[in-house]
Length: 288
Ligand SMILES: Nc1ncnc2c1ncn2[C@@H]1O[C@H](COP(=O)(O)OP(=O)(O)O)[C@@H](O)[C@H]1O
Ligand SMILES: [Mg+2]
Image (cartoon, rainbow, N blue to C red; front, side, top):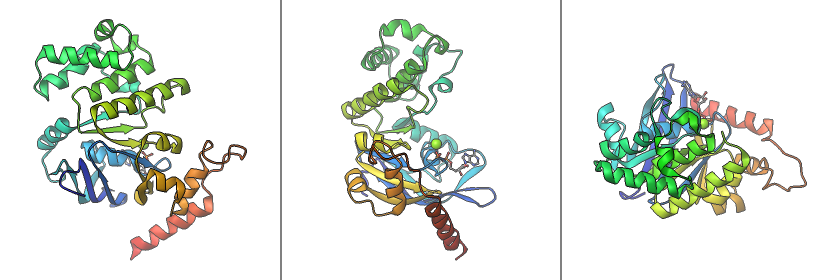
């Protein structure tokens, strides 16, 4: 880690009010322009990491330890307003569900241009030009018409293209993409992934890419953090994760991905014995 890291998370612990930890001493870094996958099964804490970075943790949870540096700025002890300002300047979210992420009673245009004028201080004209340029870039036909539309007039795939355009429009140093294709049809998923990958390269944005799909990891990520019950079990390059995974859980996740396991073999979920073994190890460590 250097001061020039886009994101540096150190020993981050997030807990429920009861004290139950949801993230346990998480460490990770993201260098400028790098794409890091957060993988692990449902409930592992992938989205929680993204929310901790963006300052959108659920009210029932709080940071109980560690620090998050966004472009060198420590976030954890900022007040809510300072934090919102700092995060909005540097980071954007591509959400999981494009159907609920847009405001249903506002036209598309201000939903893309407002952040550009209010947060980034652009002129209305510059924001409008950039919005049209990005809508065209995400292969939306007739961008001017779409700008005047309401979300309900557009398909899920169209809405996700719009959210991608909005996220990349200010060329932010960091984007958190939280399972950005899981709500979409398989054919649309491929197109959306390709767009994110291309824009990420063109803009040079670092991306924290939440996914449970090791196939996606292999295609677009350089680094991988493997999560289990709020812990980073393995942190490595994508190449090393696939060629020589060190943790049995990582091996099980790879084996559970049909396209990367032997295609002739049937789908194999992570063995329940391994899950039980890991849970008991974590429980023991926490007693001590
Ligand atoms: N709003 C919430 N209040 C309390 N616990 C939550 C909330 N959201 C998620 N959790 C818990 O936090 C853990 C991590 O959840 P999450 O980060 O959403 O998992 P993932 O994205 O890996 O599927 C889970 O145990 C989940 O039950
Ligand atoms: Mg999630």
